[in-house]
Length: 432
Image (cartoon, rainbow, N blue to C red; front, side):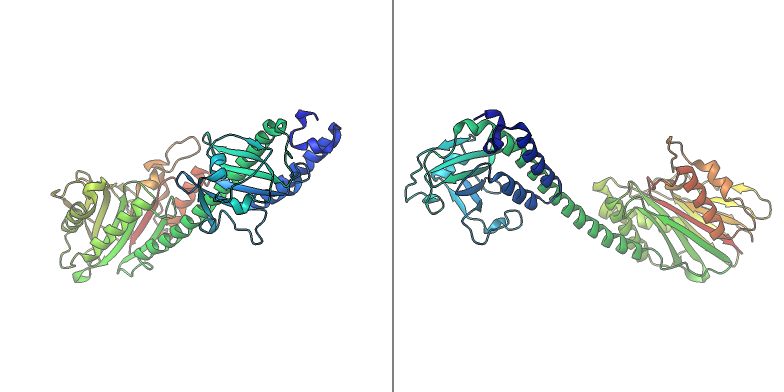
């Protein structure tokens, strides 16, 4: 016997015959990514090469030493799937199988005589010899395959090096496939949950745009992930006035989405008896600080404007948010109100927010946005920037939707249609 033949020693000394057998096996194995099918294929291909009358596989996974499980047994009429139904597998400790699996070594037993008191006696009583192949993980024999024969001395110990080597390569492949299955299932569950969360978050945003006298609206809302931290909203106020809010939670993803939902809830519990935007931001800030952000270190930038359709005056207050851009329809000039000077929401509970105002005129467009708009990056990581944003909103005859589409197209062209690296919200309002 040529030891270099390893598992394929049973097919003679012809190297071409061995190569053909090996090629047939690996082709069959490569045709599937299902670990169950792979175990079945490997068993079918290797069975003729390592004759045995029975087999057992053991596992130390999912139990505490000195316990172990029998995961497969050739004598079972109804095999149990060890990955899907591990709770149905028999658990043992001690006995011959315990000694073998916890030895972390390969073994050949030529004269097998199992005492009737052995916990695995019923599995071993009909066999007279066995070959035990450990399957290593992190340096320990976490799995073991036993081949058994009715005849004594049925296994050549000279085969052990090649057998252990081949079996562990195969075992590692199966283990990796199983880990891949578990990861894919975890991703599927997470993806489903994030889809649900995305639907919930979208339900927190306005269901369509409100009808505000003397003002036309358009909005773009994109998240970098399934959910995000951008937020916009409208509030109908006394005396026919309307509140317009845009906010951006630090970070993005699930954590930012939770804080976004909190901000929405607080904003909608604010009594609508006041039209002072600074008072509204102070109310949201105090509640965020006291209930949520003090421990999480999360903050929210926000701009809140109160528009009076009768006078076309916009009162506003900002919590560390980027100033809106106003495009004057009659003079074709850009104005950027100074809204800086206050901390974001959720940083300091006694922060005092300042108010300002601007008188708008018919034909004016006011553009509110989050930083994901002007911080969009091209392939060289250059920023889209404020100058490009200002350039693309300058259209006196365009509707808000046309201005929005112009900006969105410019960003897509600039970024080469790359997915957003941050949440993007763009709100365009045009005074009639």
